[in-house]
Image (cartoon, rainbow, N blue to C red; front, side, top):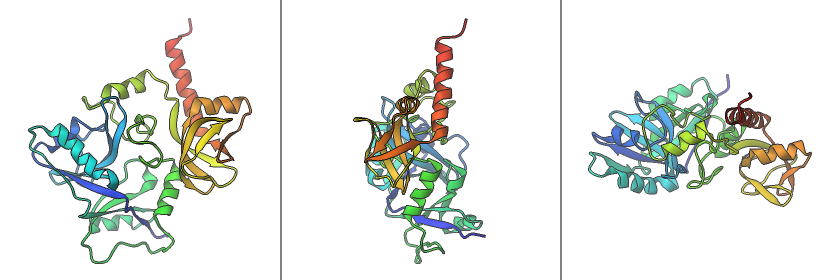
Length: 300
């Protein structure tokens, strides 16, 4: 059997939310439902602006009576400030504890569950093939390492690209992206049945009334792609390339424009390389657009 693969996610940090009112505070703020969240379980979620755009994306992990938020390390301090702004008089303590934990991704092996003994482990809720994430205490004397020395953060990013799982700050811009555009509706990142939270009305409107024309999707190139380059239709930017793994990448793309180009036989390119959007993503858009059109203009 293949051994597990491990990546130390050095760009991830951890925020601690403790106190009697911690669940109440988070439940009223984040996109996912924390009700019935159990020890060692996590929710993929975001904190939105009042305009419904993602300010922070993270995992909410239950740890005893408290919560740990697995978030981009560069955003941990800002997340503490934002949550503190909403705290008011609630019995909650919010702390950046990034120095206390190291974050790991573990996937692809039958023995991955053994790592639960090394820290706070949870199944990545976005996709089954992403395996476990582990919050390990930094004082562990021997760093956790894979048996395969070729494993690295690059291998983890390659896995995300293959699965089409974007990350904030890499594949979509924090502060300028709606949850649907970042595939939160497809990757278990939003609850459409919970009570109110910041930005909820916008998210509900996009779910029920809007055609989502732009999404982060898998793309492939006829040659190696370059990260952080625009996707062009002629001279017009219709998207942007994020994480790259050779000829494959995740790109934020205007799906309607990509389909229009496809129907007209026009090429879309990035840094001079022809880009081919994921067929399944385009087909999902076609189905969604057709369904929305039928509700707006029902047949007589």
